[in-house]
Length: 194
Image (tube, rainbow, N blue to C red; front, side):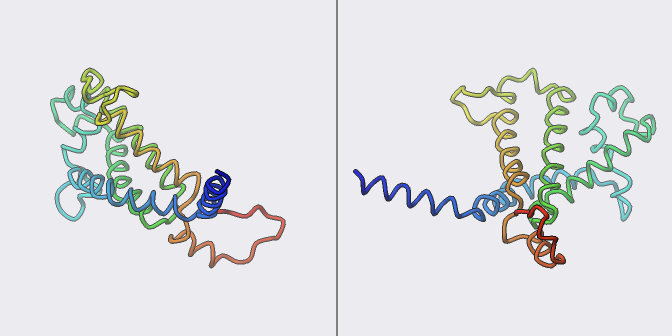
């Protein structure tokens, strides 16, 4: 029994020294599961032509402001500057933030931005698209059915992102490259960990 306990403790100590593993896996899983999802979603929001990044599609407004679009009879011209700014920023964020997470560039900030994005997306789905009235889509925790879109999937997405906020991007990241290229810091300064 003592041998088993020693093996367990030795394995646990080795895993605790593997600080690089958790953030690296979080970024790889984010890339494998969510990068293309967010990019495809962002592509649906682009307007026509070269200036599509500045002139979002009607679908973008309908996705982000479903009730306002319905009230405006799906006429974008009836919506104001606020609506344009939110839709445009959301579209840009949907392209930029996932790439920053995957590259590990400003990863903590990008992951925090993605958490905010997922929260806004979830609230829009729940109240704007009335998913809150669909029990199968909303789901419930501790129900033995792990496939709901909102409570189950989005909680796991946020967990991946929280891991990056807390642990940083890890050693295989552009954040680490920037940190290594930074001028020597004052020895009294608190070290930044990635």
